[in-house]
Length: 337
Ligand SMILES: NC(=O)c1ccc[n+]([C@@H]2O[C@H](COP(=O)([O-])OP(=O)(O)OC[C@H]3O[C@@H](n4cnc5c(N)ncnc54)[C@H](O)[C@@H]3O)[C@@H](O)[C@H]2O)c1
Image 1 (cartoon, rainbow, N blue to C red):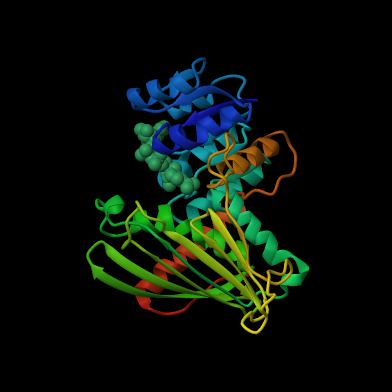
Image 2: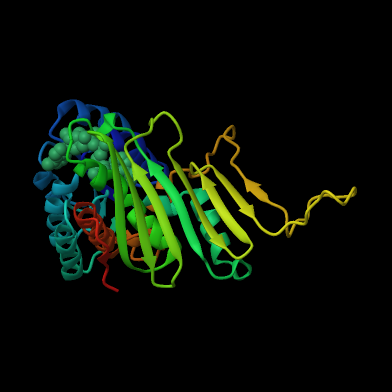
């Protein structure tokens, strides 16, 4: 399979291109206006044709699909051009700067009848997937609530005092992850605390159509050198928790041990913990990029695959628009079914 890749910055060169190559895809063409980014990527894809302009890469013959990892406005501009050439697309999040831009990509995908797979890889993180599957097992019963935090640091967004980078590049992930875990949403409301300029804390309350409760804290108040992700989904006498995409705890209904000198641990009641072995040669897929790109390659081959696509991106961007509106007004914003 021959892939053309547009945007060879930090993310593509550290995460996406090595994973694609590991999955057996050929990076046949690469594009970036910065010569040093092109030179670095050529080390990963020595035989690739190189381009400074994305439109030239899209003319390159023999491509089976295109990947794009540049930024919101360029995603919205280039994904429809690739689709118009009949190419399936992998596009990093966010799929545009607004829901309207994401909708335009969706329309282009429908016209071209080609898939657009989106970089919402958190659905594919090994730990998140284990926890998700636990919540969907019949014994978990109805899901009652979600609680989580997903933080970042102010420095990353220092050049962006209006927080749009934080919303578009950071928050959008959990605006996909929360409904993936909790099902469709009917509305949301945000409370905000700005400790000082650039240091923001949001509490987002989601209304789940099931009636379950979901609360997520997101903000720019924590170090990126420390774990910034934790979430919990609660049922009746059980809950599953994921800490920093590397530890899953499944808490159920154990007996109280104090009066039982023979107490041990019951496989069907005491807390189970899953954590990966980081010393083995083959890593688990902590961040989820491998499984996501594997799904993308399956979609390019015309197979079905459980991957986030542009329709999921449109929904996430509508939630993001609603979140921004609620930040401005303090009011609940309804979300369409
Ligand atoms: N899924 C994730 O968790 C995740 C993680 C990191 C980044 N991302 C996303 O990936 C995208 C890129 O992030 P990054 O950190 O690599 O940014 P970056 O700034 O390091 O890289 C962007 C690259 O795109 C190039 N570029 C700019 N305009 C271009 C154009 N018109 N055509 C081709 N190339 C162009 C730049 O020269 C640069 O090399 C962002 O949308 C970001 O949100 C996603």
